Length: 52
Image (cartoon, rainbow, N blue to C red; front, side, top):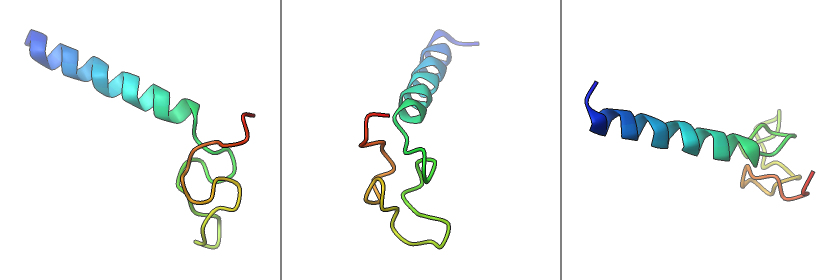
């Protein structure tokens, strides 16, 4: 594995972990509720805005 490839892999992993950490628990980060409408808990952002 090339050093550049390894660094890129770590950046992808870190970005995934950071996004998963702050995702909305109601819509799981999709921004949509089960009916396909905008999630009322995160207003469609997919980010947990309640601090829970």
